[in-house]
Length: 632
Image 1 (spheres, rainbow, N blue to C red):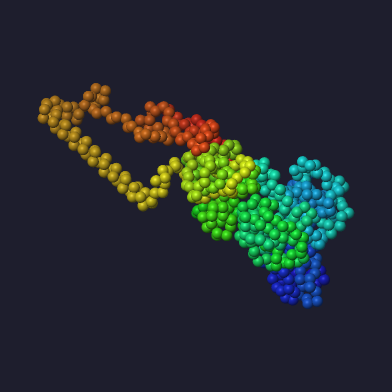
Image 2 (cartoon, one colour):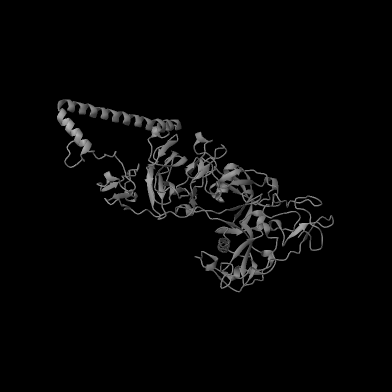
């Protein structure tokens, strides 16, 4: 539809004539602003509308009927799949975590009143939408009112203190007298996942979101603390502060701390007037902040472009071969105070002053941090690398005395971690150190896990950091450092001339053996011509009897080289073998901790009996499920 309810033709959304406006397809990419069709970009009005081509009428609503209720599933108690379906409608400028709350009941969608709606209620409603586990009231859109019925308000939502879902709550009478002027607009947020009890005590007071940009990674920052909300209009805003803000919202860092934003709000209050972050803080609560409630002019509102984790890979930036040039290579950092990605552009906080332009990931602990830390970096699931030996090579760097050890392990779905490498972080290192772990064999999918751990520290003399880079998962036995990298030309030459030389040597040995036999026969003939002639005729005309013929030479059984492992049906010389086993090197622990030996499963034992049957005695470990990475 491209006409208003009173018959005016709609103006094209990409045109500024006869009416100039900011609702352009570039800015509102998620609103499908096609040609001059009626739309409601950003949920800015109550229903679809458009600008008109008339100079006397700026805009008008369109008579687009509301969508009918979804069909009811046969024999289903919950027609939409949930007991209480909740949705975010009129998404704010494409931000998937912001919108007006709507709940489905008795075949009809309705809104929820925001008056006295508790933080607990908002969190459960956000969780039901799938947009996050936490949230807050979004005040930017409280002037845009919904239509239809208001189903709920605070008085008829009753949730126990231990409720994990809106389904755990009970409701009074459905239907509220609350006005649509108080429809609940919310900003939903994902909770960060702590890995230790100390991290859960971090005081996250400030809820953050991005709006006003071309997508949900770009725009100006809005901030909420309890019942107060505003923007960041701060002196000291830079890329280090932007990194902290972006990581708190679930990104891996910031691209830019001052991108151009077409539309910035007018008349908004600033909640933060000054911010000072070094760039390694877990949340902005750890930065130095100065609060204010003054009006911020639009040009002073701080903006940001956040960086998503890597979604496509190059040859040296993939999960099993990662130099961290373009991101985390699909690896996941777990915990609040955990692994931080350092790009190579030289603009971001760098704990190792000599390596500003080097990409890596690191864990940082400031001199004022006294709680224990467990930082985990885990790979995606490797699914098609079973039945071979592997090891992990990487480089690490550390300084300070506030971390205990760095550990590398592989994990299976059973929850068991099998340690491959552990190093105590006791003395400073001023360079990157190359390391290869012990080899391991798995018969099911696996993950690689880096863990950096520290205990409580009452006092410290300096900041501390641990970094890793150039993580490569290699197949085969661990190579000697002096032969770790072999030139391809050497391989080609060896493969070409090696067999040729072997054939020449065998031919030469055979000819010498034949010549020796001829000489021996000639000598015997000269010494005993009659016996020689008789023997010669017997060999020509009489059948051979190996049991009685003393002149017949016996062929000795071929002896196998050390470590030979027969696979498949045994050959004749193998029929006498009883059992052949493969020895796996014991996993060493550089921290002298041998308690984990029982978790190092031995390789399979292959039994060969005279009938030629084979069997594996050790069952394979269980497979690792969850997110799957397929190594192509």
